[in-house]
Length: 112
Length: 112
Image 1 (tube, rainbow over the protein chains, first blue to last red):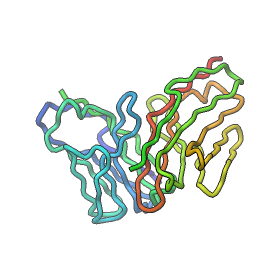
Image 2 (cartoon, rainbow over the protein chains, first blue to last red):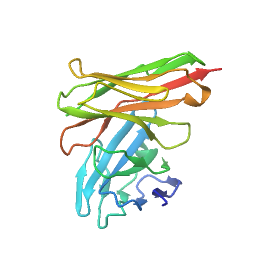
Image 3 (cartoon, each protein chain N blue to C red):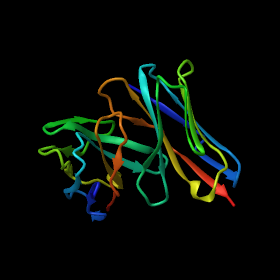
Image 4 (cartoon, chains in turn orange, purple):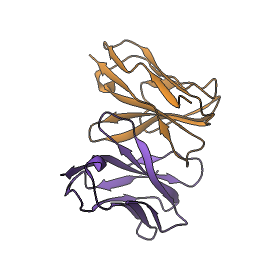
């Protein structure tokens, strides 16, 4: 099993550009989530999904969109990148919200 | 919603000593409390978790205690080793379909 994979590993964007961060898992997990990690701020939840076709907002959803068309994939879209979105982004998956979350390797995003 | 406070933000211990990290939560309905370890440049990984029907759980040198009355839980690492150096995150989840809320993390340094 590959576990949770994320692409790209690193990305530089200019303010106003859009992009999609990819996340995929091969463990047949129903629950998937996106976090951003900033120094001193811990892991903050952006969006999450409890199954295909179902998504919901987390703590910091503004500026991001998600969709869940399949159990395996959960892409995160930045609509119009801003310097405040410079961060490390982690995708995670688990059988349920109260089971072990498996994190992807992360995407480091720099917005200039 | 749930709020999780974590202390201290940084902790330095001598190799072989014990380390204790404490977290408090706000919602008495929370019933799942995991701890994640994140080594430098790596993804977070679950090291231990506890549910509200248990007061203490141990796994080799790691233990977690839960005090539901005071709404706090703690991570105890005994006989610390250099490889224990990492950032540790506590989290809490409210009974039902609510996502994990993470603390801001504790950077543990084990000095050889």
